[in-house]
Image 1 (tube, rainbow, N blue to C red):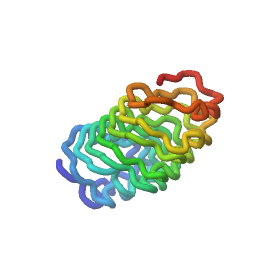
Image 2: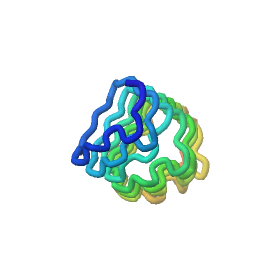
Image 3: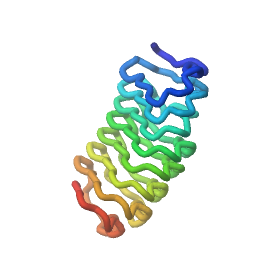
Image 4: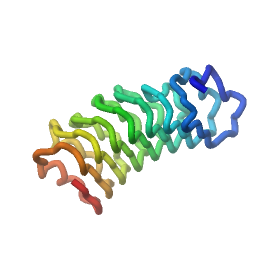
Amino acid sequence: MSSIPQKGFANLKKLISLDLSAANIFKIDDSAFEGLDALTRLFLNDNQLSQVPNNLPPSLQKLYLNGNQISALKDNTFKKLSNLQLLYLGGNKIHQLEQNAFYGLTSLKKIHLVDNKIHTLPGRLFESFVVLDSLELNKNNINQIPNSDSLFESMASLQYLNMADNAFSSCSIGLLKVLTSLRYLHL
């Protein structure tokens, strides 16, 4: 299967979990998931996707996109996914994160961005993450955090932070001062 057509699953209205991992998918039509109003888990791991699919069901709570070819996360990529709690984007080729890429992810508890090509983190990138408790950014090329004092500003709930195996030459202590719930830190 190289693509998912328009309304490809439209009659599966009660479907709560859909696993399309390792299906060699390159393209997903903008209306492919239309009608999947009960879908809470979507597995798209190990495909050939170059971007996060558009118009994902707002009911999603868990989204797995590990091992694809995604290179950038544009502004408002996830804006309609306010119910999303877990987001896995590890093992992609993400090198560009726009300032509002994660806008709308107000219920997110865990984000996994391990093993990408990220080199910089825009200052207010994580602004929507008010309930996030786990952030994994290890195995990237992060060497710069502009406006580092504001990066984690809204993340008082964060308990787990892994930023190991990056290219930091130094780290501002102001970066961590707002993380009062932190239990695990790996730099």
